[in-house]
Image 1 (cartoon, rainbow, N blue to C red):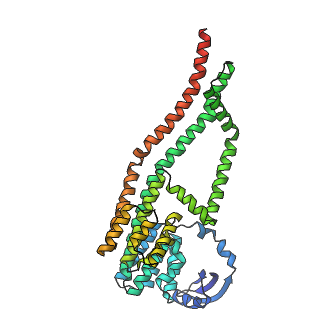
Image 2: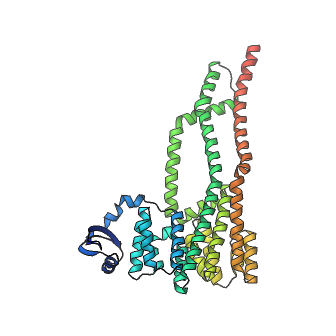
Image 3: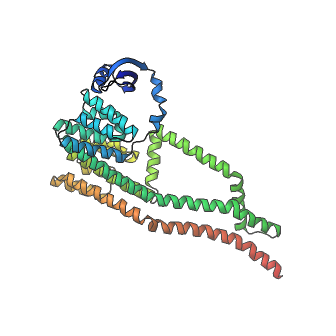
Length: 405
């Protein structure tokens, strides 16, 4: 991508300056012509400037805005309006500067002869590989309006699923950090004052109290070191997850085994997987090609590797359900429903049932997670308070015994 500073005259006769980021200099003249600009001066800017565009870095495009764009494009294409005109109109109406720049760029590329799916490749982090593949299929089959609608509905459903998943994870995370904070407060501020009083009495302290005193002293001395060590460890782990696939796989595998968190993430990925495959198949894409696309879309490396293995098994001639079963990852419900879909020729219908089933399951967990995690929290707090009470009651009992003598 190269940057160009253009001084030009627009259709109204005004002199304007604009910066264009384009792949190929040969398209520059046609892009300017399409934008209604008569160039006066063209200057190529240094490549490093695109990394210094701070405003652009902090502009965010929300998934809901992408869904709205796809829905609007569906309506406009269905009405018969030219695609590049529709994109230009949407760009003019956009309030988000990032959306405006993106739609204008896509419009210029489409107007210069590129396909919409090709123009969207630059923005696949927003539209996703699956949506771009759907649009490409629509362009090839002449059903772009339908695939745009399917893509919008798909993203809407996935966003709802993500929202329910986040909602389900908020309470366990809050409960964990609240409990941890309460424990640290006790060890750093409360216990030291109590144990100091016990020491002043000169009595023999029981083992439980000594253990609590040791934990309290250790926490007081090294709380900052522990905090910094945890922070550095998180940074190192994040870097390793980005650079090393084995570390990413093992940590993702560990996440799936966590109580509550693992269950929510696993169910989310089941629904996500079924929804993607259903959408690809309904658009007319072969199963093996759909698997290849969804492999790139999956964030969890355990599922990513499993889907890759399923793809390899299918290319060797095995059935979809048999390939899923070999991975020891997918639930019996998924395998059974996929098998029924293969036997009856209604795989798309069964995948829709699977995605809805796990969508409802995540929804149920998000609404009942408080009841599910409550016994665990009560158990942890109860055990903590038991240790505290045993440590405090022992010295008090010893002190009363000495006084009574």
